[in-house]
Structure formats: C-alpha cells, structure tokens
Image (cartoon, rainbow, N blue to C red; front, top):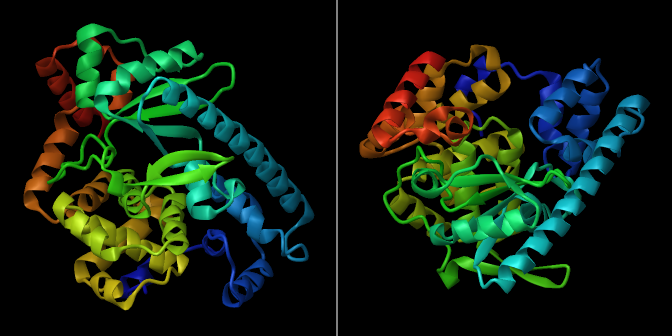
Length: 386
C-alpha cells in the first residue's frame, strides 16, 4: 500500500532483504526480488544484527538457505548454527510448558498459554520458525498467588520477593509477575491482564472464562486451552503497539496469524470498537500490508486508506528504519494518536506519568512505598528519564 510520505523513509538494502525474509512462504515474485538484492554488495554483519534485534534470525536462515550461490558460505553457516540453537531452545521451552500445564491441571487451575511456543505452532505452523525468549501464561487474578506457589515449588524464582500488602498492591496495579528457573534458564511471565498497565480500555478485556473465546489446540497428544485466532490477534496488536513496534517480528506474528486462519473480521472490529482500539488494530494491519505484503479483504483495505492511519503507519515505519530520527515526542505522538477516544488518551497519559512500571518495582525501593509516594516517585522518574 504505502503512501507519498514513505518517500521520506530510507530503507537499506539489508532491511529490504530482512522484510522479504520475514515470512514463512516465498512466492516467485518475492524470490525474484531477493535474488536481485542478494547479488549486490551487502553489509552482512548489519543484516544479521538487524535480524537478531528484530527476532527474525530463524526466518532469515529459513529463506536464505535456498540461495547458497548468493549468500557467503560463512554467513550461511553462522545463520544455520543460530537456527539450530533456536530449535533446541524452543523444544526445551515447549517441553517445560507442557510440564507446567500438567502441574496446574492437577491443582485444578485454569490457565491459558499464549505467544511463545504456542504462537509458533499456532501461526507459523512450525516451532522452529519463531524466536522467543520466555513463556507467557494467563491466569485469573485470584489465582496468581496459587500459581506462584507452584512455580516456586518447581524451582522458579520470582523477579523479587514480595509479601502481604506489598504483593497485593503489586498484583492490583501491575499485569505480570516474572519468574526464572536458574537451572534451566527458562523465563516465564505470569499475566492476569493482557494489555499494558498504561492502556485504558472501554470494556472488560478478560477473555478467560468465556468458552466461545477459547479454543483447544492439540500439541504432543495433549489438548491445551488457547485463545481464539481473533482474540489472539487483538492481543498481538495491543502488545506490539504498547512497545511501539520495536520488533518487526511482532508485525510478522500478526501477518502469519491472519494467513493461517479465516479471521472473523466482524468480531474483530466489534470487539475493537468496544475496547476503544480500532485505530490501533488498523495501524497493525497497515504495517503488515505495507511491509510484509499481507493480503486482506477489500473491505479492510478501505479502512486502511484513512489519512490518520496512513500517517501513523508512516511514523511507525520511520521509527523502525530511521531510528536516528526517533524522539520522545515522536513516541508520544504515536502512543496517544493510536487511541481514537480523547478520554482514553487522557487516562493513558495519567497512567504513563504516575503509575509505576514492573521494572520500577524491580529496580527501586518503590515497592516499600505507599501509593501517594510511589505515584510522585514515578512522576519524578519520568521527568528524569526524558
């Protein structure tokens, strides 16, 4: 799609190759474009650094391995070694996930894994093709402490020790609890809220407990409760925008998921309207179309032609490909204008300015403060950092 503004974005040949490889399937047109680019003088170190930065190393190797004549032997060898390490890690993490799910099931706890190995199988149809760092599990807020107890008994350490009032306040104000197993080096994030703490939504985003929104996925002969493709898509879009699309892999996740399932677009936009995230969803879709050639129904394309959506998409692409031009003001422009309702923008702004983040709970003495002090401390931190 693109627009006239894109003429102001300078995308290197290496980034063009990365974009062409950021998919599980190559058609003849893409193969032809890749062949031409691979036959020019390239900075292979830069390309692999960018692939690592954007968590696209597996896909880069998966698609370049068919171009042995064009890709230097040492580069292909390095990519293959990275690919094999990722496969081993992903298999280890999938095995760990299945073990943990059995433990939770025996305790009668309802949990929903998402992203991580599940998304690799769910959207990419191949565990080896997605690069991820941790396991993500969603639970009811009331079950957080029960799940925490199981994780600790199984050898996981919480990111920090909290007890009593402080822990209750942490669960109330945050959305995730991070754990790590020192023996396996596996990290796990326990979520009880899908959106970031700075996102204000108009409706209840809690998908757990609604049978019509949960699907059963079969992995290694085990049936696992998962989110429907539509709810998974909504969550992926919220997550990517909450992190300002710092990784191209998040856009790739959206594209691959849509291509793997027949999406109920009526449900997507009905839910997006209720949550106040329609503009946010459209920016994600526009990025997937512009950068990864995603095919969407004509009715969706009409929404993407909006001047506002095109402008926001341009701003995001500028952040990705021209980071030297990035600034706090550009981030703020994107962050608040992806919300279509003024009330959400105001609430988001107040949360960003005054609500402590998970990292601040971890790195500061704020966890010992009462709310008024922590809100003031957060405000000072924002002013200091930016």
